[in-house]
Length: 307
Ligand code: MN
Image 1 (cartoon, rainbow, N blue to C red):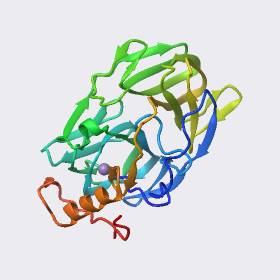
Image 2: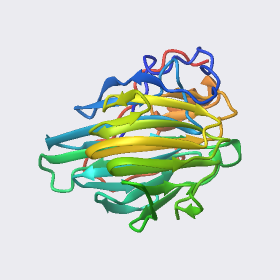
Image 3: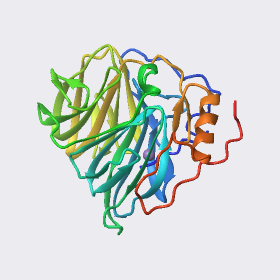
């Protein structure tokens, strides 16, 4: 999925947003956004909650049985895309030459470094089941100017917690590490199962819960799809009570130290860097290579504020 970030999501002149807090449950409604003609729930960024650790963008799409993903070649900078499906399939192609079908339970992780291009589409070209999430992780200074990469993982560790099971998408949980690349201290868990379970969390991380299906109770708060529950910093445990067949993501990480400037598909630190990425994409420079896709390349929106 492409996730154009607009000034509605994260005005570039705003401050970074509130700092991490002690354990809390703050509920933020998602905003409905349009990605390639499909309505998605955008949980991050919000003007009042930009990041959770290095997690800087969360789109939840579906569930629907008439979805069609047709997102033509578009660029990214300064981030990783994390794709996780509950239903349906998607075909990923990128400018590194990767071509990978992803199915439910598998992880696609693309690292942009300084610049990468990808396209994502329904492999049959027809409408069908679509349900999943695409998330972005902001890269730290050390790797955001580096080379790109792509990983596909079919065997992810799963850790039981009472009636729940946590698939470790990225980072480490309960002493078990995902094979996926991480450039900052962070964790991403896909939680499923029914009933109660207690997750042990890293207290130096801030965390958030995003429900994809069903409901999860955190204390007295019942969290449903279409909102993000910010859980704060310093939490050692998270007890969840899931409705039958529920699914959620638990995201965490060390509070991100840098002020991000996010515009369209670019994650940067300054408006001048955004303008440079715009020029490189629209000018067709070598920074953004070709993708073997039949779909049309997506033009960047007009950039009026060049810093
Ligand atoms: Mn994309």
